[in-house]
Length: 161
Image 1 (cartoon, one colour):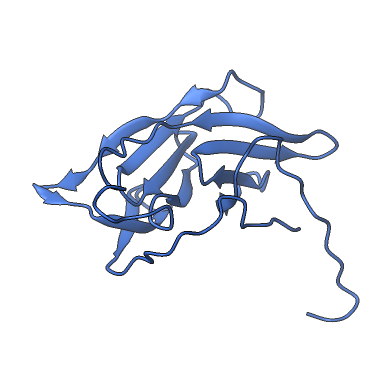
Image 2 (image 1 turned 90 degrees about the vertical axis):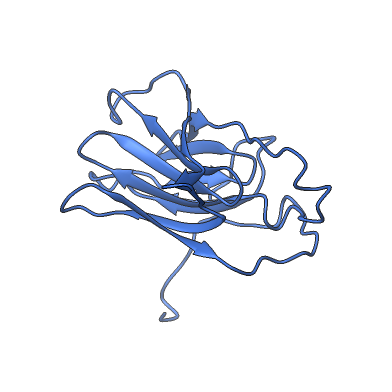
């Protein structure tokens, strides 16, 4: 980047945790940001961040098994613009989706629907990334086979535009 570039810090809403993933919708609006605690917010010019959705984790006894917060974060987020859907990949809980009537008008925040933790009986494992194929609208995801076992602070990320 040249020295003439400048950045503006985008401040997340109070009481939210670190940004983990971001995406823009088909109209290049956003960014939509998912935080480490499962909150989805959309940045609107001259307004700030609006709460769009949330999802509940099904952590169970993962922490007791020695897996820590470094693995317990949503890892990916992508749009299916044809159906106004946002997909989320979570390291433990698998695949989630939120459907909106319209991304243009402000709606009541929605709860994400849990789609899958396995495919044909094979556990998804640690989902680490996600995208939606614009040709056929399939959600594609990948897994990581190594996950840090170190504790990381919950407020360790930053956003800039």
